[in-house]
Length: 448
Image (tube, rainbow, N blue to C red; front, side):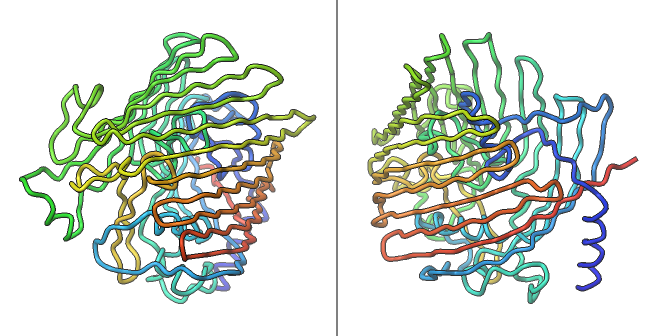
């Protein structure tokens, strides 16, 4: 292990990482500075490349996390089991393992000009059950390889973006709409297996389409609830039309149509299926740069509804941007769930952990699930190479009271990202709280 550490340290001291990427997510230090500079109604967003290679450039990528975590409150344990489904509280607490458990990554990146990018990154982290049962191990004190999660990659894709057309295929987070927790498709899941296409008809009207493919497997109890014969097929299709007549008004309508147990046809891909959601949003910037956002959505099978309201203001300073925002959400019961397993509007992934094969079910839309009322406060101070952010969510969901606090500082040091994060979550009678300091070293070797 010492030899690995010395070898890695030698590389890190002699090679700087390639700093550009095609897509920017909230895990990138420069994301918030770019995101607060314009109106973005899709997530993730495209980055600005520092260089535009005229021929293909191929890189070998490697990164490694050095970290310290203090567990201030440890009153949640993720139970094991074989091919079992999960509830909303387990999904919410799992974020601790996803965000804090990074070990190392290895893969390839490929650039061509400013419109083509591809990457395949195997990202290894502490397994979900290992994280909650034991501790947040690093690469240097990991007791055994069996403590590593086999749920990878979580962020690998091929993308094209030129003029009026953009598309990406792979495993990425997705969200559509003006709010932090959008109601039709939001980035609750760590990733979607997707084909996503966007086309701009002109500078006022554009269209989004994506196919979201999920695990079609069911638990033993869910199989018993399936009365008729069915095909092990489960996909969702998103359609969104966005219109901005001027710089102060943005309008959109969208649908999420799920096709499960049968093969899709054009009607249930683009118009209506057996189960799904219709939604719409309005974003107004009336004066002084104040943003007024509203979303409304309803499940057209159960007729359950949900809405979101938000107000925010971004202040521009020299080399910095500061945003303050407040949002309110209410989602009725049965907005996502159904007695028939294939009619549940949850994006299902499977996580392979020691002594466990767990189906994690993420609501396609609102993060905290159905039967919920949440108020959210968001403060962000963004710089070109980093940001401070604080998010406070308070209210209730189907599991009881919600109180969530996330403070994060993330900064790009060229050799990697330095992060300080305090995160706490209470849901019902369960609570978990951590303080994390980490340094993610990253290098990219240019291949001849």
